[in-house]
Length: 243
Image (cartoon, rainbow, N blue to C red; front, side, top):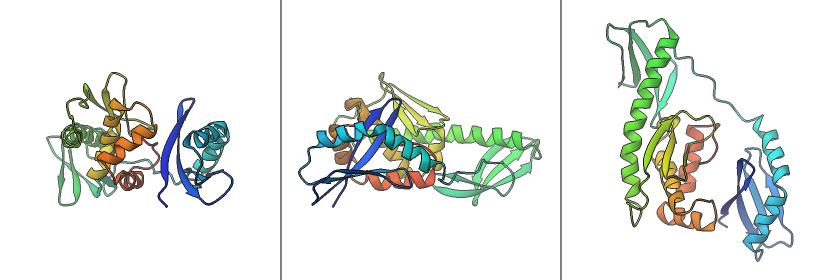
């Protein structure tokens, strides 16, 4: 049976949970080792009753999530040395650093090629690569924004008033109350269909600010395979929270 997806706010956190309806008489909330929340509910339980139960157990849910989170695999910090692998649009590339009078970064034959006047200094390589990622993110995200706006019946209504690209520690992106779209620079590491999921998700917030049933109904209509895209994003860019 297909799980229903919902969420509640708990302080500064959003607790997302899946509802699986079964032939049972009691409602049970579980937190999986990957920190996902699953609610097993009787077939006829109203959504309001399920949401209220999750809200009452929110403190316990957050404790369980924090407990499991400490055992999740962490992405090692990048060292920006020759031979290290980096992702771009879902593919892995090896870093190649060569001395050159003109500093530049480009993709070539499976490599991210870094031309540097100081090839032995990793901090210089880091600055060059991060600058290249930021530039590519601004260009690619603007392109994908136009593609994803076309999914909506009234694209101009959902057009954000600005697009901001920034390095974020905990989020893939957000939509401000002023309709400014903020996207994490790290999204440029993910496959294009995963980037499209985040953009479409955030654009939906212009009409539906909260993660209620109407929000997910809109997202389901526009992007029916969004759970698959979200899973792919979580594998490509780990250790970030859902948008």
